[in-house]
Each structure stands twice: as structure tokens, then as C-alpha cells.
Image 1: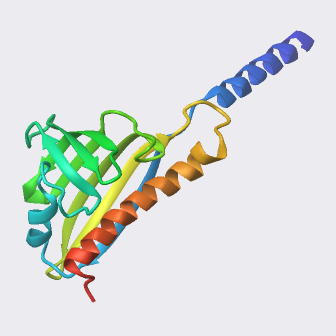
Image 2: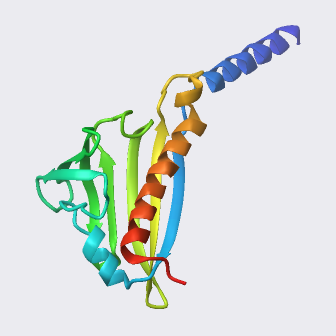
Length: 175
């Protein structure tokens, strides 16, 4: 009986150690805004993988195409370059999904960042939904405060808010 208890204790200790060794979990963020424009009007602005003039910080884009697997490089007004891939585009559903192909902590303090944007019709107005999935910026255990889950989530939410703000400036809020 004593040997059985020792064996059980050893297994529990091993499982506890494995739980602590687990890396970061996938994090998510969701934001939405109701715009004073039709879904078609908003899609005409944000539905192009090779055009992000609606986002004020973008100074140039070089894209390889507009189909799944296409890539683009966005250059921002602060000189930072963002490399992205088009994961999915569905004009009929007003949906576009992209992901960073290289982590860039100067752009966003998160890793494996992906963004899915959809536009839905709400009484003739466009509801834009931004859904982000990512990992914290520091992949190992015990991250520093500026690279932990909370800091990465705050950075992703701030980026999403910049997009929302740019759309509000362009189309106005539905009221």
C-alpha cells in the first residue's frame, strides 16, 4: 500500500510539473462597430488585400495577388514593415482573414497574430467585426510584464481600436 501511495504521489508530481511546463495559450480578442454605411460600401473599402488606404498609418503596400496564399508587405508611417498572408477572402460573405508571416514586436507585442474581419448587415448599416487570435509576445514561462498575456491582449485591442477609429472617421457611426 505504501508503494502504491508513493507511485501515485510521483505521478501527481509529474502531472503537476507537466502542467507548469505548458506554454502560453492562444488568446483572442473581438471588437465591432456599427457604421453609417452599407455593407457593400464598407467592403469596397476594406475588401481589397492590396489596398489599405483606409488605415491612415499605412504608407505603401506591395501585394503578390488577391487570392488565398497571396502575400503583402505593408509599410507604416513609422517605417515598420509588416509581412502578411491572405488566409481567406469571401466577397459574398464580406469576410477577409490574414495573418502575420513574421512576428514583429515593433508592430504588435504578440506572436502568431491572425485577423478575421467580417461585415454584417444590420438594418442596412454595416456591422464590422474584428476577431484576432494570437499568442503572447514572450513564448516561454514567466514572461516579463510588457510581454505577458495582458500586455499582448492590450496591444492587440489597441491595434483593433485603431482600425475601428479609422473606419469611424471614414464612414461615421450609425446612430
